[in-house]
Image 1 (spheres, rainbow, N blue to C red):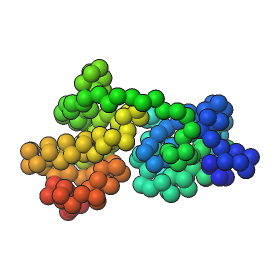
Image 2: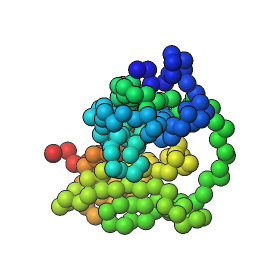
Image 3: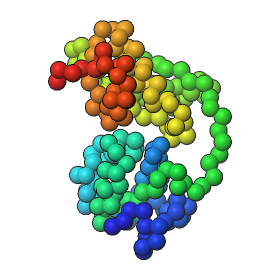
Image 4: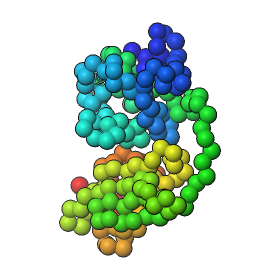
Length: 195
Ligand code: SF4
């Protein structure tokens, strides 16, 4: 099933939202899900459990996809049509211009939290587990309204700073953090290479 079409016609964001789909953003690809028509067959979870994980909130984290193409392939395997995809740039709803607030970072031991300094609300987080001298990054997330501003990259940078400060290594499991480590050779001094 082509996950960006309904009845053979390319669908739009406003049509999907009017049909009861909920939107899950990422910078590249938006995923839409309609619980009412999900047949609970589980192709999505079996296809990519980093993106689709039952019981997690949110249960779809689009930015966890290893690639846009892979995410589209999984969505196209949904037999019920409960999952749809659109490239993020296709969003046809007018986005409200929001002034970017100031942010601070708070190290809470097992995660570094991004705080909106104007409201004191959590705006994102990078979570990690500690195993001896290694920080295992398991998740990076930024609230949808603040994405596309380099905040997720800053969260990874904060863990790199922490590892250097505490003389630890980093083993990224989170696909976003893996991409950051691939793209930034300057992080190689803290990357755990021997596992
Ligand atoms: S593949 Fe589609 S129908 Fe199956 S569980 Fe996932 S969303 Fe529901």
